[in-house]
Amino acid sequence: MKYFYVFIFLFIGFVFVSSCSDPIVGNKEHLPPNTYLSIFSLPGDTLAPGKTVKKISWWGDSPNGFVIGFKISFDSLNWGFTTQNDSTFKFSLNGQDSTFRIWVAAVDDKGIIDATPASNRYPVQNSPPSMVFDPALVLPDTIYPVATLKWTGTDPDGDNTILNYLYSINDTLHFKPVSGTINIMTLTSDSGLVPGNNIVYMKAQDNAHAFSPIVRMPVDSTKSFYVKNVTAKILVIKDMPTVIGELDALNNYLVQVMDTIGYNTLDIKSNNGALIPKIINPMFIETLKLFNIVMWIGNRNGGANPNDDPNLNLAQNSLPYYINTGGKVFWSSGMPNITVVQGALFNFAPIDSIKTSCFTQLNLPGDTVFSADNAYPNLYCNSILAHTNGFYPATNPPGIAEMIYQMNPNPSRPNCTDISYIGLKSPAVNTNLVFMFMPIYYLNGDVNASNSFIKHVLFNDFGYGSMKYKSNVNRRKFF
Image (cartoon, rainbow, N blue to C red; front, side):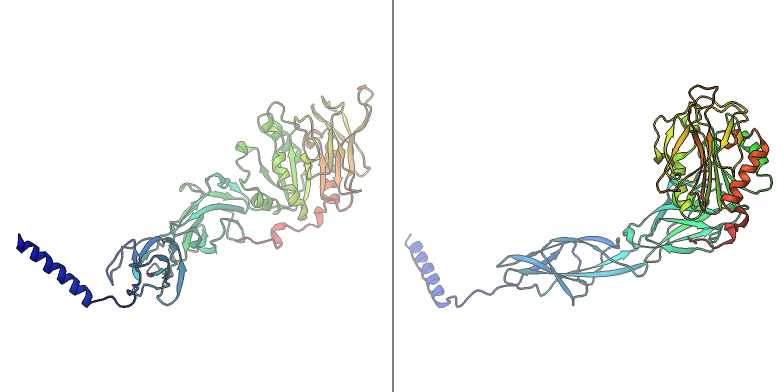
């Protein structure tokens, strides 16, 4: 037992002597922090290739302090500071593939920076872009030489890396670039559209010069779209259904009154409106601009089926632009079944409001539509014409509308005690619009009068005889 106490005594003495012989002098050394990346690699190693967009995480540890932030560099020479522990980086490629390196150095509360920053090399593989045409905005199967295309382009490395879109018409050998910042373009004959069958091919190119697969319009690989040539100064828009014989009546009328005048046609009711471009501005408007004059002719009214009414929505969204760029419009249609209508319905015509007149029910063959201007002949109904309304013209500014046709009071109809205007031209000088509130082909009871009326509108009001073909003059080029 005494040996045990002797051992304890000697041990305590040894510890005491040792502590007295080696005292701590000054402050303990402050060690720099250490830095770590979430993905570790040995010096000189390269990580597996990845996309150009990368999220990188890091953290730091201070032996005798705490980390307040990090210095970050991509070249070990220029450094930035952050308090974050991660960030998403977008590596921009100049070629197909490349390798990027990042250095991260922790900074502690004393301002001491890790002298051996953590570092990794990140190889990046470029991902090619892709594009697709908007499936809701396909081209009609038959058009005049104006085609507006809309698409969506994407890139796994970021949509802003798309440098160009390229298009080629009717082959895949002659691609032309347009900016990667757009997603809509309009092609014309100046772009390469030709009369006959056409196909547009497109592809996207990113800033690393990688291409998407080629897409085509039409998307169906068995189809093309047909481009009709512009052969006249006048476009006749047929805006009536075929099921009630209206189209036949119009065609017969045109044969008689346009006997010496050439015109092209666009049937916007055909095949449930399939020939109407899905993109009104610019495609439909630019199609109208191919012609000097647009004759838009609708039926008497839709009756029970509103789809048979004149397409006022299409007219509202196109004719003002067409007229404002110098186009001339002849409009003729009945009134849709709308009980309260103000001028906004005809935003392209100076109409204040619609008048329900005594002629709402019926106009019989032989009834006269009287000229309100001696320059125009009286016109005569050639068939039963139901639902005839008049209108109140706009009066501001003065001269915006000049009345040219009216239904006069009729002694055989007791309620017909005032005038109902159904035709105007606007403005009175330099006329660019002639507006008839009846389908003109039902006012053909006197063929000579009909012929005289149309010729007066085209030659006297619109100056048809001195017009040059739009296809032979310079027009705005798109792509």
